[in-house]
Length: 136
Image (tube, rainbow, N blue to C red; front, side, top):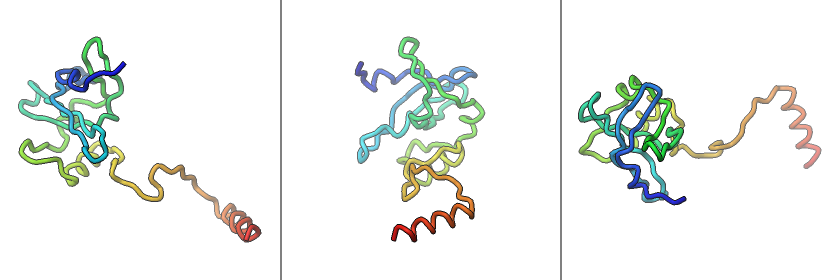
């Protein structure tokens, strides 16, 4: 079933501790055509404060009760880097945010990005070199 993203504005952001805030907006990346952040108004418990939550952190959407469920605590949200309402989201701010929560930054790419890696024992390296030399 297709749904409008506007339908989710006003949904509660919930954790095991209760309501963390209300969905106020979404930040959209117009180059990649994806939603980068759910903008959450923390309302009464952190008056006037908005926070950004990447969509990957939403563990469940409860359409019936109009909730987005996350595994974050109130303490984590309260101590997260403050968002300036007057400025666009900068890479510096994103770096602080992702570092604070321990999230893997979406903008990091390169040879190992998304690749499966494993440790190699020194004896395995010899076998690999021998195999490569025999195939040359």
